Length: 155
Image (tube, rainbow, N blue to C red; front, side, top):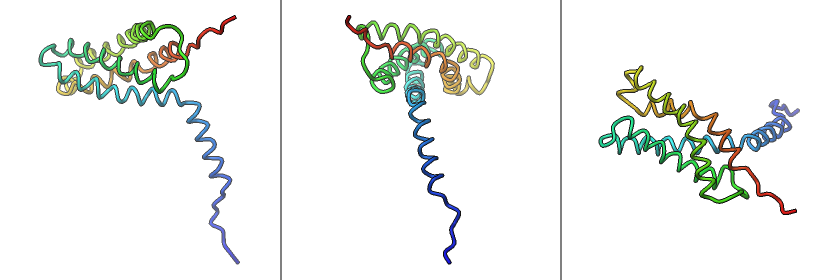
């Protein structure tokens, strides 16, 4: 008599289907987070390179702008790909404008952590990470709104 191991192939198929459904449902959020994770390294690298000349605050402003431009390109090409409305320049300016609000939260968290936590003063990359997380929700919702606008259909 053959014993079964208790493995049920239906459970595996169900788990794969649920996982695929969740992945599809949260695809843009996952890719937005990938974009932000990559931008974190861009941000830290630009801050490290510019800090000797621009200081902590000026270097952070420059690093934020470069990282935001990187995320616009990534999100436009990968996360929110598809038909776009209006000019590319207008979209870029709209994206950067809305990211500035999230950037204010980001920069505020960076400054607050820099002023309150000795470890952040010693390793400002931690402040960049704290700021990046603080601005994530606003930036995702804004980017999704801006980049998923579809062209108007001709009448």
